[in-house]
Amino acid sequence: MQSIDHDYIGTITGSLFGIPTRIYKNNTLIFYHSTVNLVKDPVSIYQADILKITDHVGYFMTAHFCYYGIVNSDNYKIVIGPTSQVPNSTPTLRDLAMQLDIPGDDIDDFIIAMQDITHIPLESLMQLLCLLNYILNNEKCFLHDVFIDDAIQKQFIESMNKHDADMFFSDETTQSITLHNTYDFEQNVMNMVRKGDYMALTGVIEKSTALKIGTMSDNQLRQLKDTFIATTTLVSRSAIHGGMNPDDAFTLSDSYIQKCESSNDYSRIINLRYRMLIDFARRVNQLQEAGAKSQLVSDVANYIDHHMSETITVEAMAKEFYMSRSYLSKRFKAESNITLTDFILNRKTEEAKHLLRYTDKPLTAISLDLGFSSPGHFSRVFRKYVSMSPSDYRKKYLN
Image 1: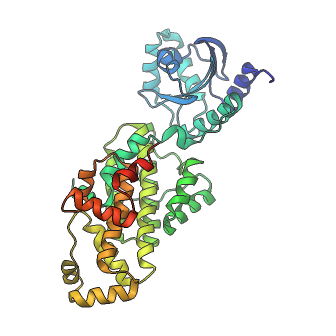
Image 2: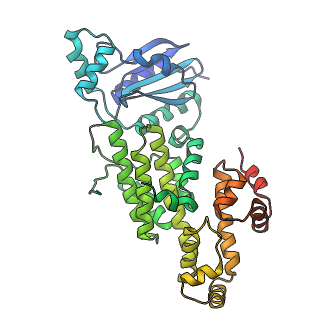
Image 3: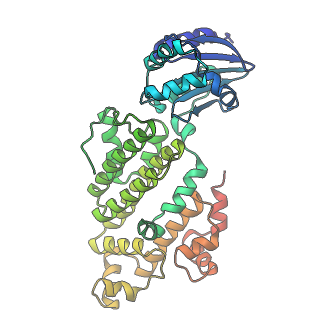
């Protein structure tokens, strides 16, 4: 096998992207290339933490939301950075110069050089690292592999699943935004949400970057949050076009935005964005599956979704729809070819399958959340519709 010329890769990468590039061998710096003349390399402040990263592809975020990317290959490490989507302010760079003990006469030159480094979104930097990883390690990876944390996703699913949504929503300015990423990609994602095609959407997100929006703020964290808000606004509108009740869509949108605004963790916000996209598409899918049969079936499905944590009775539902119990049951069976009781339990079972597969909630908590009288009752119903116990179903999907 032909040996890899690491210096060549470092030179081409640094020159092409205009971002300082370093190569370490056995944690010792052996190569440095930069198109800007930095008085002192700022990586020295964070070097120890960056070199501790052992994943093939990873990144390190500073307190000022500048980032360094790293690719590990055997005893070599390629470190690219710092960069950011939003340029750091002069006072921030002056503070950095002080941390580096740069002489006063050289501080202005350091600030100018730092401002001349190419600014790119974190997603774009990570795509570059994925390419380098393929060259160095012969391993394909995508942004989903780098950014999406399964543990964080489980937390979001547990807090945002629809049967406790009403409780969550009860807790305590949309503007026109120009998208600067590929228009076709944006439309593709929004069409998937509108159609409720959450499986295809998952595949697209796993193999590409999420929606990226032009700079709207001079603060890196604020930029990420503004991007999240803009994306959520577009997604909620697509969900409404797909049949989601506008009040439900706006309420869900508000809840995600509140979660985003309350977080100062870059990684959690990226994970929340992924969860938001899939959540909207999945809800549209459930509505469309029910609505494809009749308006009554759609109304019943919507009622179940809003009362998922309760013990749902045909009597209560009939009262809600101003029908007699017998008429509702007979009409529903005629329009759906399934009894109303079976439809209710089927829908609860589908939600249970989602929770069992994607969260760590114990069976007792799931049975309570879904309005079953006891864990035993939940298990019997689940086994009836899935032909296996909840525990066996969860084990089936464990990695």
